[in-house]
Picture 1 (cartoon, rainbow, N blue to C red):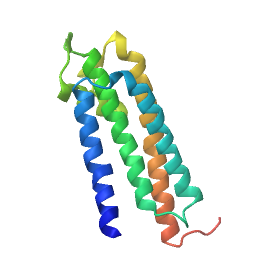
Picture 2: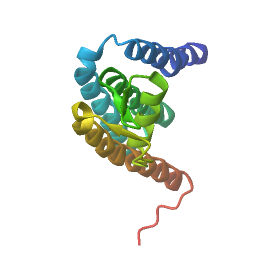
Picture 3: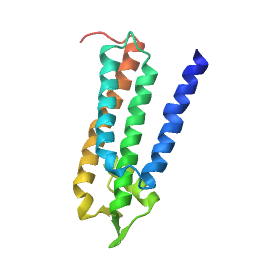
Length: 158
């Protein structure tokens, strides 16, 4: 049974993200990115909800794995859009996978180094990604802290 679960974990957390990354970076599947984003968002929120409401009956590590996978898929999905539409670097529009992924991560974490800028076509998309990153990261951290606090027995009410 554990071997089967390990196999599924490798598929879901390893092979699926890799194949999704390759297909999005190759430009295939961009038309379905909005549907994918909706499902990723719902998977993240469902897992977050499960951590807080069904903690006793569920294994928590798969829930955290789904949350991390959802964040990864969002970052890659946005990177695919930036690759397709281009981003600005020193006044030129570039369509490089590494630059698109870098810009996606920097936008997701709201660092904003300033070396790359969104083009007119993706400004709203970049703003949406920054808002999603600002929402997802604290929710994931809150779920981790809640579980750690619960496991340590520090549930005293103030």
